[in-house]
Image (tube, rainbow, N blue to C red; front, side, top):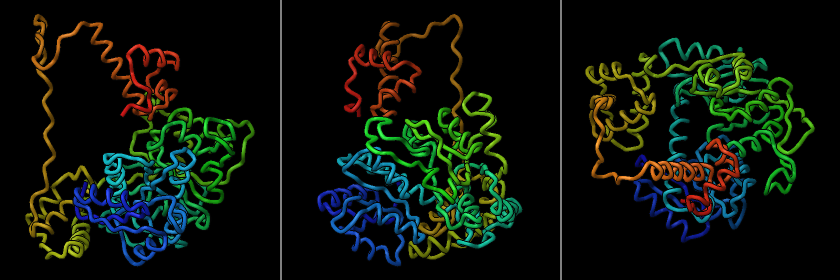
Length: 465
């Protein structure tokens, strides 16, 4: 976790706030505490934090309402919402309000640190894409300033107003951190739908069942905990734009329903039968090769063609090395102001090294290099990509490997049972204790999974940590 970041913790339970301060401070983070909505608003006025930890239930208001107010005012600081009510409904509300993650009380310190690390990474991506893809001011017909001396991003920005004026579905492709979400926001802000909502959902971040209820809504009684009818994102975003990030990781069941949205402009809620008309524009993004995924049977070919009516490809940093000097100067100014240090000069040797480096981490890696130079007062050569480990030497065909000292000898039956037990436990963890979802992950029936849990003496799913 990067040091030097400042976190605002909005939590009225003093003991919990102090615990979070202690844990995050040990990771090198600076923590500011607010106990009420009013206190939080005062601390947020004119000041930028790198992440928020926001309790939902506060003495003078609702944390989700505060988050919605911040988003409406243009503050996009990544937020982790904290709640004592761990239901699907509260999780969906948090995600819709713009949270990057949520924590359910009581939570352990590892979960807290992981959520904050994810929020900081999300903030780094926002900073990164703001540099790479340009920013469209609300209501403006064209993209604004962009740090680019090459043709790649200039071509993209020049294309945005033309595409934004239409209702065409857009597929934005590029490596992680190349600016896909900002392009989607730019399309929305430059479109006739600019006054409608812009709703973003990460298709890779939610389990299949939660993703479907999030996108398409559900009827009362559709599943345990569905006490009332709920509109999905496609209904809630009426008149606006829905951004489907990492659409290449969407489960096949949800893909069929998304195809219906694009073809018929209607959804069927989970547990429902009657179609509901929707009025949204869809912008999707992925870092995956959808044609390869389609050939593997993991992505519907008909959906792929529906999504890429207008394909936009964002180049990686290594493909636009001419932009590196301008980006370096921007980051030098940013981090010298943050750390209060002198600005080291980008000498000829450092410039040559930067231009020659492949930057597999794209702009995020470049920024880290510049920040390190500000802290140290000098530029050092960028870290070389780690060497690939050589493949293990093949065993001789007539040689039987002997037992290793650190691996206990077991029968084949025992080895198979151990591997089977490990697979079941891993699936239950991945599904957060949901046996039906775990069975789907394992490719077995619910009954088979139930039998295996008892056969291997596995604890109840909720106890697996």
